[in-house]
Amino acid sequence: MSANNKDTIKRLIEEVWNQKNPNLIDELIAPDYVNNNPEGVLNGTLGYHQFYDTYTNAFPDLKLSITDLIEGEDRVVCRYVCKGTHKGDLMGIAPTNNQISVHGIVIATLKEDKIVEEKIIWDTLSLWQQLEAVPQKVHQ
Image (cartoon, rainbow, N blue to C red):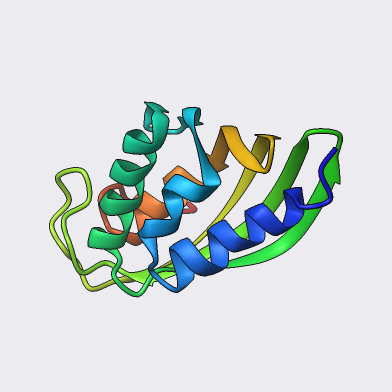
C-alpha cells in the first residue's frame, strides 16, 4: 500500500476538479483506467478527460468537498458532496441555472500512485430533480 493513495485522491479532487487543472489527469490517472459510473463505463485517460469536460462544461463552478476518506490496501473510499450551478448542457438537458448539491461515493483502486479504477455512485435521481428533468416526489 502506498502512503500516497489518499494524497492522490485529494489531489484529483482539489487540483483537477476544484482548481480546474485537467492537465494533471494524465499524471494521476493510469492509461488503462476504468471508470464505472451511473452513466456507464469510461476507459483510459481520454475517458476521464471526457467525463471531466462533461461535468465542468455543465457546471463551470463545480466544487467537490470530501466528507470521508478511508484507505485500505490498494483502495481509497471517498464520500463527497458536489455543488455547482447548471450553466451548460448536460446530456441533453439545457442549462437551468439551478444550484445543485449531490452526494456521492467513489471507490478508487490505485497502483503505483495512479488511479486504475473508480466505481462511482452518486444520487442521480436527486441531480435530475434539481435540474427539473424529473419531478420531485409529491407526498399525498
